[in-house]
Length: 148
Image (cartoon, rainbow, N blue to C red; front, side, top):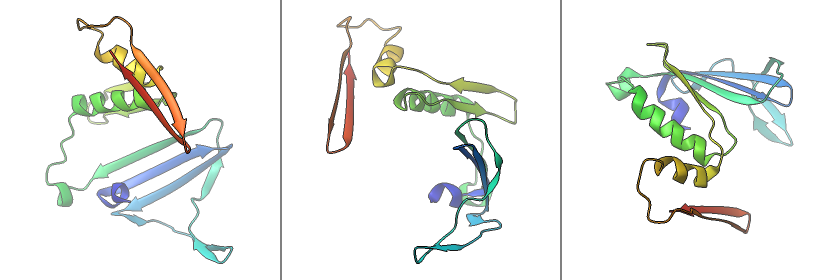
């Protein structure tokens, strides 16, 4: 994917079903890649490197200055976007760490889209005090709408 092709390096750790998996990329190329054939198809599984007590995914990367030129990330911009993602991915906890400054924040907001509307309207004069919220599903596609 584009995400692992652009950094100088990327380290991916996945903890799932009691196992810890790890994969590392250098400029988009997998380090220590193994290939297997399953049902006649060549696959490259993520190696198991140990046991895990909980589920979760960690992504660590270093942006490539040769591609981007300026790799100065702005914590406040990233923080705002990650806060939005934590609302929109209900039940997910996202941790943002800035290893330059040591600044770190955890985002785990409940309430989904409705919670996001409550958050962005918290200091505003709203026209309607009650948030309209609806969830529907059709053909395995779920849509959630909230407005105030």
